[in-house]
Length: 174
Image (cartoon, rainbow, N blue to C red):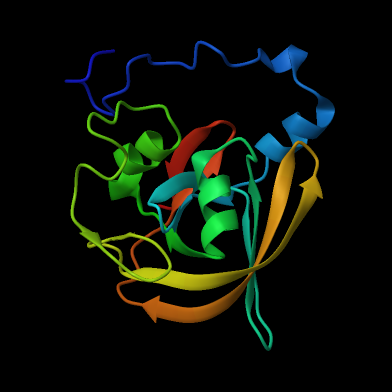
């Protein structure tokens, strides 16, 4: 598959993917749960595609996410103490791949597209919905860090269909 083909990926499959029989039972279970695809950004700027995201309603509302502690995003959120969470739509597949490190980012992750600068981190100008969060704590959780943030600001705009991650691929609600 070339960059001119739909999806614009370098490979049609992930060359580093673990074959199904070699995956742990927990990973296989996780793959069978549909997850929203979100973009998390922090001042710096830094960003990361995250599909392990949970919103907890309450006073205060909270956002929880499993984050790779070796990512630039993790370092940036630790330094800034705040971050933005943006739900992505099917139109954002290339954006999701870019921030997941699966799509080239000449000039850097934020070099293409228009971005609104917020105190929580850059937000795509096309984002209809996003939340600004203050980092409360993080702790090890499996092979990731569980980030727990207090939601301070919520912007709800257009309600585009969500981009979903299921069984290692993007999907959308039909």
